[in-house]
Image (cartoon, rainbow, N blue to C red; front, side, top):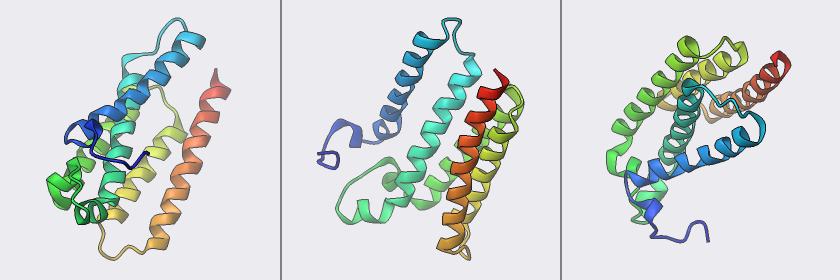
Length: 153
C-alpha cells in the first residue's frame, strides 16, 4: 500500500514537506521526557536531517520514478538541480551542527561523513562499494552520536 499512488504526498513540493511530520514523534518524546522543551536549533537540525534524507532517497529514485511517470520534486527538478538542493540542505545542516548546537563530536563527524557521502554521490568516479562504505559509516556515527549525547546527560 505504501507505493500505491497517486496520493497527496507524491505531489511536488509536498513530497518534501510531508516527511517533516516525523518531527511529531520528536514532539511526543519531548512531551513525555523533557518538559523544559527542546532548543530551536535542535528542531531545525532535525528538520534539515529529515529533509536531507528525503531529497537523497528521491535522488536515488529519479530514474525509476521518471520511467513509470511518477513526478517527485527531484524528478521535476532534474538531477543537477536536485543535487544542488541536497548540497544546500547539507550546508545548512552542517552550519547548524558546527555553529549552533552544543559540541557533539560524533554528530559533527556524522554530518562531515554525510558531506563525503554527497561528494561520492556526485563524483563520476566513485564506486558503489565506496558509497556503501560511507553509508555504513554514516550509520555508525549516527548511533555513536546518540550514545555520546546520552553519556553527557
